[in-house]
Length: 385
Image (cartoon, rainbow, N blue to C red):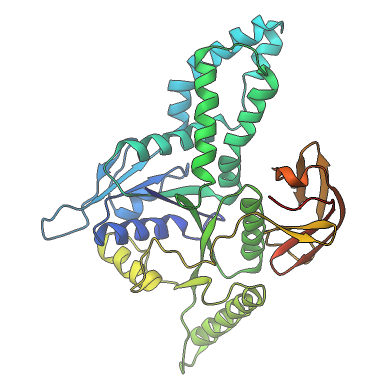
C-alpha cells in the first residue's frame, strides 16, 4: 500500500493534480482510490462526476475495461456528528471520575481539530478496507493539512497527560491505539509521502518552504514538489498580449531560479504549464498527467531521496547530530533539552524529538546550519551504538 498526500496553498491546483495522478496510476493498472479531505470538495468537479462519502468507481475509459479507479469525498462534519458524540461522553465520565468537576470535564473533551482528526481516520479506514494498491489524498490548504498531520501526535500527548497510567474506558484505550497507528502510518516513508504543489510566486513559494520545514519536523517525507500554472513562453509573438505573457513568465522564471539556488532545480521540481481551459474529465486529466510524469512512474515522485530526520557521527570526545531540515536564511531556530528529548523550534513550529539513547547524557555545546539543515554539537564520551 502506498499513500500520496497532495497539499499546497489554496488555489494552486492541488486537487486537479491529485486527480490526474490517480487517473494515471489507474491507467497503468494499479487499483487506486483518490480521497478528498478538502472542505471545498472540488474533486468531483475535476472528474466531472458527483462523489459521496463512500468510494465509487470512476469510469475514465471508453473501451469497456474495468476502470481501476475509485473516488470519495470525506465529510468530516458528518463524521464528527456520527462518531465523536459517543466517545466524548465516555471521556467526560472518566474525567469526572478522576476528580474533575462537570465543567472541567466538559471543557477537556472539546478537542480542537477533531473534524480533521476524524477525516484522517476515515482515510485510514478507507485505505485498509478496499482492493486498491494506492491511495491518493487531496488534502485541504497547507495550514489545514499541517494541523491535520500533527493531530495524531498532539492528541495522543493530550490523552497521556490527562489520563496517565489510570484505568480508562475501553473506547479511550482504542482511541490511543488508533492515534499511535495513525502516527506510524504518516511517518513511514515507505508508505506515506507528500507531494507539495505550488505556483511560481514568491508568497506561495515562501509558504511552501515553511511547509517543508514543518513536515520535516513531524517526520513526514516529501517525495516531490510541483510548480503548477507556468505561463507558456510566447516565443516570437508580438503585441500587448505577448508582452504580458513574456513579462509574467520572466517573473515566474526568476522565482524558479531562486528555488534552484536553494536546491530545488529541475530534478527536484516538476513543472506544469497553465492551460487555457480548466482540466476536467478523462482526456484533460490524461494530458495533464503526461506533462507531469512523462514516462516516469507516478509513484516514484521527483524529490530528493528521503533522508532520516536525525543522524549521528562521532566528533572528538562528543558527537555531531545532523537534523535534516530545509531552512530559510532568516529562519528563527531555537534548540533546548527537555528531559531525554531535543526541543526544536523553527519559525514558531515546535517539535520534541527523542534523542538516541547514547546521546541522552550529552549536553548541547553549539549549533550551525548548512545546505542540508542543522548540525548540533554535543559534549559526551560515548560512541554511538
